[in-house]
Amino acid sequence: MSYPAHYAELCTLLRRKETLKSVGALLQWDQETYMPPAGAAARAEQCAAIAEIEHKARTDPRIGELLASCEGDASLTGDPASETAANLREMRRDYDLATKLPPDLVAELARTGSLSQEAWKHARQASNFKAFAPWLEKMMALTRRKAECYGWARGGEAYDALINEYEPGATAREIERVFTPLRARLSDLIARVADSGTKVDRRCLKARIPPAKQHEFGQLVLRTMGFDMNAARLDVTTHPFCSGIAPGDTRMTTRYRDEAFTDALYGTMHEGGHGLYEQGLPKSPEGRKPGRFGEPMADAISLGIHESQSRMWENFVGRSRQFWTWALPRARRLFGPALGKAGADAFYKAVNTCSPSFIRVEADEGTYNLHVMIRFEIERRMIAGDLKIKDVPAAWNRLYKDSLGLDVPDDRRGCLQDVHWSFGLVGYFPTYTLGNLYAAQIWETIKKKIPGLDAKIAKGDWLPLRDWLKKNIHQHGRRYRAAELCERVTGRPLAADALLRHLEGKLAPIYGI
Ligand code: ZN
Image: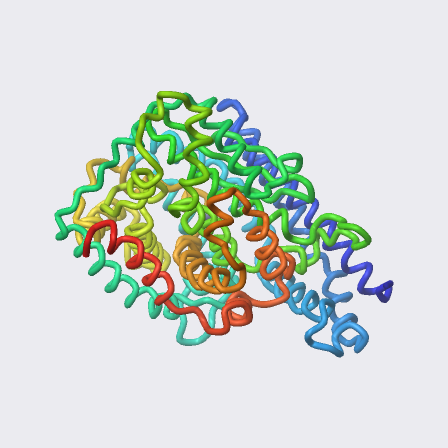
């Protein structure tokens, strides 16, 4: 099928824009993996240069002209449910957002962000918030300026403009509405677990496994997930991430600690879930279908949905009894006697304990969302100007005391632990909890749609799950908004009950509550 010339030209321009974006992503990936420290200043210039060129491509007035002419073409937009109509709707959104940002601000965000990220790395290592504070100050000022350029609906707040970048259509108030009751039920659950007096034996997780062996096991898990390793890399960074750089090129990272092999295992499954979403998007040519790189239909809907994919593999597959039935004999073969003698049931219980801790990325499923809600509150107040940068550590520590009952010992284990704010990612954290909520609700549907799923997981027969996700979620790209996709797939709007059912159903028998 051939498209009218104005639509074809539009797709070509957007493909070029996406190619430039992928160059920027590659620079960033390299900065976090292999770049020597002395390259930081030059890298900041490289990032700023490419961001400027990309922004120019994204805001090319020709795109505006072509959009207007395509929008008036009934062969493209006559059927609002068509792919071309959905593509144009999302192209319009992207163009309108991009043209609201002045090029100097875009370059400044990239340049300062790159330097600030480098400063964060050192400050975190030294647990020295004061060294990072001036950079955070600069990044928050730039981020606030960005929010003002985007603008927000009457009655809303600057934060809405920022979260809209990651979770189209979401607002701070709406998130607060979902989070408040979730926090209440979770706090209650965590308190009941603490009061149960049950201590789960976690010694099996302390086995000392060399990183090279852990890496090998991680690769086996990824292959079983149906991940195409020919089209991906797995490297090591301080803060694991996944970047769907380009068709056929997905980069993931993890981190290894000798005495905590399940950290890397779950980190790998998590990023692998993100990676499968990237691989399932129709970016690359498939059979007779052309690759659609650059079109919204080949792009992820929202970070919340992206996170639902990673959480599903990490928690709903990886932390299940069936997973350990499959994994343990294979781990034993690879790790040898170092793994110890504990059985699948012991591992299942050990990876599903619930106890408050300092580090978000290492938090258990039960307490994880409280970490997210703390960040949501702090960043919302920073952007509103209600919280001064110098007061961030105190506010952070107070919230950890109130929500999790913890006394934060230092900023490295406190407000310096996450990379996000260092390069201006504000409005990003809530999407982690949205991801957990989407994952739980979608999982309840999957259990009904894939017969014998538990038995399949126990056998390592995971491709039916990957294929279901590809068919029902990945391949749609941005055809539907997150809320709409959720309703289409699960038959109801997003709610907290599925996640609470999942957590209570798991923790109650383990803790006898
Ligand atoms: Zn993630």
